[in-house]
Amino acid sequence: MGLYSIPADEPYMQIILPRAALKEGYVMNSLLAAAAVDLALSSNESESATYLCAALEYSNKASAGFRSQLENINQDNLHLLYHLAALSAIMQFVLPNRHQTILERVEIFFNLMLGAFSIAMFNIKWLTDAPCSSRDILKYMPLSLDILDSDTIAALEKLSTVARQIRVPASSPMAIYAGDETSLASEEYLLTLAQLKYSFREDACGRVKGYFLSMIGIGGREFLTAIKKREPMALFMLMYLGVLMDRASKDYMSWWVGLAGRELIEEVSGLLEHSSISQIPEGREGMSWTRQQVGLAPLTTNDAIEEQACCSLSELSLAFPVAM
Image (cartoon, rainbow, N blue to C red; front, side, top):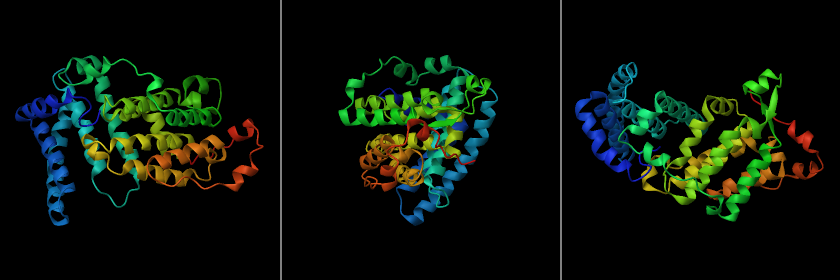
C-alpha cells in the first residue's frame, strides 16, 4: 500500500520493477524521479534544488509514457501502473510546498491515491495474479479487537459515539431517494469508519505497513468531498488517521510520512475546536486523545461545553456546520 507493505514487496521493488524499467521507459523514468526526490530530501539546500529539478524532468517524462499506457491497460501492465501511480502520489506528498497547508496536501494525496486505486479496480483479478503482494495480503485472516489496548479501544468507541450523534449531508442513493437531506454519520460513513477502526488493529499487529492507506479507497470520492467541504465528522476521522500516520512514520519503510500525522492533527483540531464535535464530551475527549498520541497537549477545558451539558441528544445532532 505504501512503498513497502509486507516482506513479499521486497523482491517486487528490488527485482521486478527494475527489470521492468529496462523494458519500459515510463517505469525507468518513474523510478529515477523517485530516487531524485529521495536524494533531494536528504541533501543540503544547494544540492536539493538540483535533485528536485531532475525529479521534475524525469517525472514529466514518466507522465507522458504513463498516460499512453493507460489507454491500453492489460494484465501485464496493470500492476506496474497501479504501483507507479501510488509512487507518484507519495512523491507529490513529500515534495516541499510552502503555499499548501497539511490538509491541502492530504487532499491532493487522497485524490492521487484514488486514481491509483481506480487502476487496481479496473481488473482486481489481474492485480492479485500479478507478482506483487496484493494476493498475499488478501489471504490474511482478520484481526480480533483483543489485539488493541484498552486505551485505544476506549478512544475508538468515542469515535463511534460521536458518529451516532452527528448528522451529515446525505449522499447515499437510499437517503436521497427518501428525500433526506441529512443522515447520521454512523450510517453515511459506515464502511469508512469500520476501515479506520480496523486499521488500528493492523497497526497494533504490524504485519501490513501503511495499512491506513486502505481507508482512502474505502472512503472514495464522497469522503474526499466531505473533507474538502470541511465537514466536521470527516475531519474528526482524519484526526484518528493522523495518529496512524504518526505511528507509521516511526518505521523507516514509511519514511515518506514524516511529521504529517502530527501536523494534520494540529491543524484539524484548530478547525474543530469550536465545532459541533467539540461540544460533545466524547468528541472533545477523542480530539484530546489524538493530540496526546502525537505529543501535543490535550485540549483545554471549554466552559461552553459544561454549560451545554444538559443539551439533549437531538439538539446536539442538529449542530453540524458545513462549509459550502
